[in-house]
Length: 125
Image (cartoon, rainbow, N blue to C red):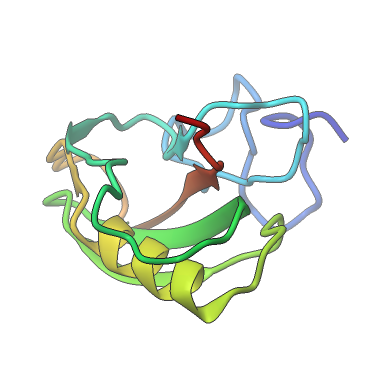
């Protein structure tokens, strides 16, 4: 399956042109390296800075977010695609994803599902 296409009969178009702009986003193609996925919406406030993080871990953490019409993240939880299940990375990623603010859209569904992807790397001075 190609990211952003196809339908599995669940009522969401997953990017099909004849379906809603606001179909829930699905994360899962390793070839896609963007960090935000929420169909039809952009962020007003996002922050991928973890300068104060005390974890000595590397890997990718995928957080599923549920966003309301006002653009507020109402829930955030770890999702498939995560490559490091360190509790330190997971907690920091969930906390950070909850602080994201998406552009308000009165035409969006009451609850829309999307993803925020955090990639942690070791920096060599």
